[in-house]
Structures are given as C-alpha cells and as structure tokens.
Image (cartoon, rainbow, N blue to C red; front, side):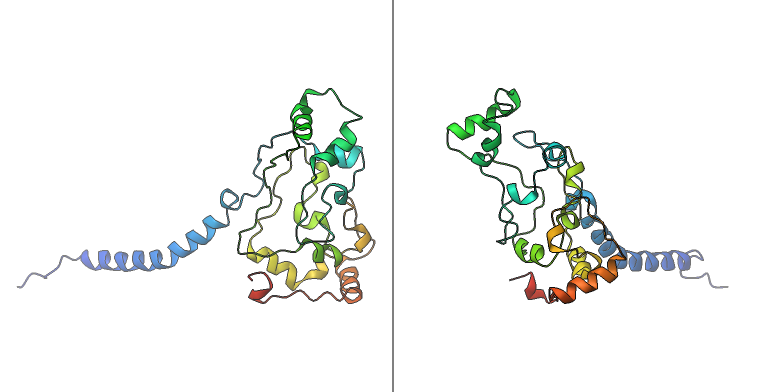
Length: 217
C-alpha cells in the first residue's frame, strides 16, 4: 500500500491559502478605500488650534454678523477669503479694546501684518472650487461648512471627498435655497426641499457638471 504523497490535511491548507490570497487581493484595496475615508485622513471634525480664539457663536448669533462681512470674496470670487486685520479692528477698536485675548490682534494691526489663521477646509491643490458660483446658484454656507453659528471652534463639517461633491452635483435640488438665504444659518424650507430645489434650479439655470474637467483643471 502506497502512502499519499501529501498528508490528508494538505488539501484543507491549500484551500485556505487560496482563500486567503483572494481575500488579500480584494481586501487590501477595500481597506485602503476605508482608511482614506476615515475622519483621521479627511480631517473631518478635527479641532485645529488658531492663533487667536474666535467664537463664531458669539459673532454670528449674538452680534448678527453676516458671513459675507468677514468672508467678502465668497460671493464674487473663487476664494471666500479671511478678514483683514483692519476689518476685525473696525469693531475691536471700539469694543473689548483692553481684552488680553486680542493682544495679538492689536499687535498685528499696528505692525501692519496679517494674522496667519490655520486653514480648516483644505482641498487638494489639484481641485478647483469656485465659491462665487455656488453662492450665486443658491448653495448655502451651511451645506459645506455646517452650522458654524453653533461652533465655539470651527471645524471641517464634511468629508470633502470627491464622492461627496459628486453626490451634490448629481442631485443639487437637495441642497439649493433662495440666494438671499445663502448665509442664513437657521433657514429651513417651507415646503419639501426637493420640490423647492427643482424650482430654484430651473430659475437659476443650475446644471452642475460631473465631468472631470469641471474640478480638475
């Protein structure tokens, strides 16, 4: 009687090895896709320290300062911009003039130097995004930036992944609002959002591109 060339359990081991190899081929890409979408990689909800404490809750809710007052480029250029030190001092030369929290602001103003704020929503260099066209077409600040009027320290609300952008471009009616309500943090539609959104899309000729060249130029 001849003995088998391989032990009986070798078949099971071989099948396990094949299964492991297939799982690795499929699993490694899936794992990589999961990792790059994790908040750790996207920066979503990460608290970033700023050179000066700035509480949007106070400035937006308590003082009623409109987004465009500070981010004056949002409705007229690709970049929303950050306020010049002179804009801040327009108020703080009259109020909180001796606050120690504003020592650095006053120093920058008299030295004629900008405040180096840390960027919160940071798109890759190869991605083109135009704030003005989104504002003109009725995309609210809340859609991308969240309820900053409820944030003591601003953070990145959304993932900013390409899929997130494409979802909005494919179904803009889910996010559109009247242009005069773009900066209204607490605005809510008075009828179904999809119905209102389709109406606004027709009025404002909203036809978002999903071509690669729309954002990758």
